[in-house]
Image 1 (cartoon, rainbow, N blue to C red):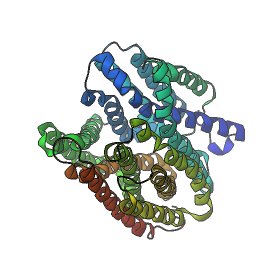
Image 2: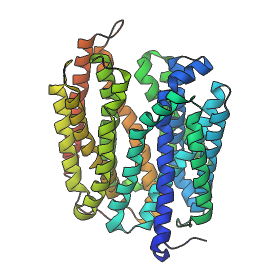
Image 3: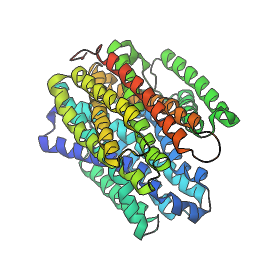
Length: 465
C-alpha cells in the first residue's frame, strides 16, 4: 500500500531517509573501493592495466544504462519492492565478486553491483523529493550530496589500508554484510511513497537505451585512451548516436514512454540540464587532472596522487550540506553564480599558478576552492530543475538530469583531457610538455566555468511549477 508522505511520522521519515542515504553511500563507495586494489587484481588474474580498468568501466556503463530506465521502474514498482530488488542485485554482485575465480566472473559481479547502484541513486533522489516539501528540498538534496561526495574521499584511503594487510577480496567482505543489513532494514521499515501508474514495458525502447547509453559511454571512455584510431571506438560511438536518436524519436511517439522527454518543455529545466553538465564536467575533469599532474609532471608518488583529492572531496561533502540550506533560503540562482565564480577563480588560478615546483599545499587549496564551487552548483541547480516540474514528472526529471550529467560529463572530460594528450606526444612523459597540456586543459575548464556563470544568470530565483 502506498503511503502519503504527509502522513508519515517524523521518525518514519528520518528512518527512510537514513536507509536510502546509507544504501546510496554504499553504492558510490563500491565504485571507488577497488581502484587501489588494481595491482593485486592484475597479479591474481594475470591481466594488464588496460584489462583491469574494466572493473570500473563495467560498473559505470551498467549504471549509465540503468539510469534512464529507472523512471519506468519507479512508475511500475512500489518503493519497497524496487529498493529490495536493487539491494538484492547489489548483494548478489558483491557475493559473486568475493568468490570469483576468474576475471570474467569478477566483471559479472561488478555488472550486478552496477545494476543495484543504477537503480538506487535515482530512486533515492526521487523519494527525497517526495518526502520533503519544496521549501525543504534543498536541505534534503544537501544531505544526499554530503553522503555521496564523502564516499569518493574515503574510498581509496580505506581500501588502501585494507589491501595493505589483506587480499583484495577483503573489500567485498567489507560491503557484503552492510548490503545484507540494509536489505533487512528495507524489508522491515521501508514504506511505499511513490505513486504507481499503468505502464506498458516497451522492449524496443529498453534495447535502444542500452545500445545508446552503453555505446556512447564506452566510446567516450575509449576515446580518452585510443582516440579515433580505434575502429571499435568509432563503431561504438556511431551505433550509440544512432540508437540515441531512435530512442528519443520513439519516446516522443509512445503514449506512455519509459523516459518522459517532454520535461524539456519546461524552459528552466533545459537551462538546468546544461548547467549541470558544465558543473559535472568540471568536477570530474579537475579530479582527473590533478592526480596525473602531481605524479607525471611533479614526480610525486601515487600516494600523493590520492592525497591531493582528499581535502577537496571532503570540502565538497561538507559544502554540499551547506549548499542545501542556502538553497532553501536564497534559491538556486544566487548560490550557483557564487559556485561558478569560485570555479572560475580556481581554474584560472591553476592556469597561472601551476608549475613543476608549485608547492603541494597551493594545489590542494585551489582544489578545495574548486570543490566548494562545485558543491554550490550540483545539487542546488538540480533541485531547481526538479522543482520546476509537476510531481508526477519527478522520476523522469531525475533520470534525465542524471543521464545528461553522466554523458555530458564524459564528453566534457574527453574534450578537456584531450589537451593533455595532444601536448604529451612521443615516447615517455616530457614533464614540460605535460605541464603545458595541464595548463591548457585548465584554461578550457575556465571557459566552461565562465559559460556556466553566464547561464546561471538566466535561472529564476525560485523556479517551481
